[in-house]
Image 1 (tube, protein in one colour):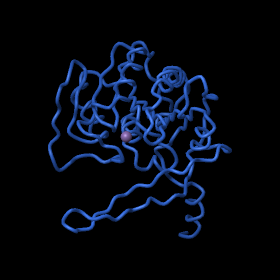
Image 2: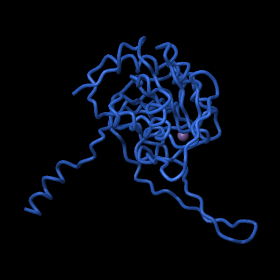
Image 3: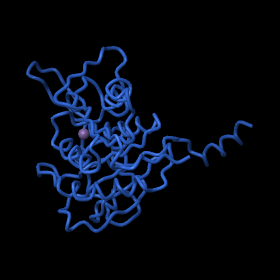
Image 4: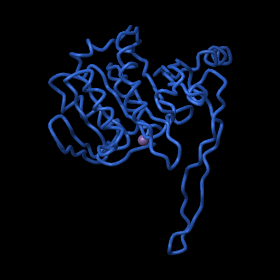
Length: 260
Ligand code: MN
């Protein structure tokens, strides 16, 4: 079954992210969305939720603050934002398309497992709404090249909206850290693997108690190959369709023989 957003100029577009309501990438994405349609709504987390993955808040109440017309902050995760937007704020008419981002930093390879940006688009997909996650790759301590995302995103969103698009597939887009004139193209590629273990650093607080911090600098990817890390390393925009169904089919067939 294919889902297709309504004609984009009449589509209701929900914009969210995991970097929070004040993030520059969210403003960029809202601007991109408003070039596509006049019915654009922003519902984003009150505070940064990077690496929140697909978590949702079920033990504490969620508060919604209206910052401006069609612009709301939710005291929760990216997934909470999509749920609250669809279930309450936009209860009169569900969005036709959910755009998540533009994330500050890439969501490549294993990042996808932790990404709140991808999770928000995934939550939309779970609810039968086409979802696209968008991320701008950035070098540490350098300003993000938002203009690259801004240049390519409308083209990509328009093409996706007109393409055959299975209902249970979420689209993950990453823009390379290059000025748009130096981008080599748009490539449809698979999710990569870094095979890099997250480092856990121990340090001590002012009272001498140890604390731990998860995170490692990312190794530069190879530019040869058919994955998101490789495509963006060679200067292309990567477009990766992700299936909600995580079943390992070949493994399932092998296991079926074991258990028969
Ligand atoms: Mn983020």
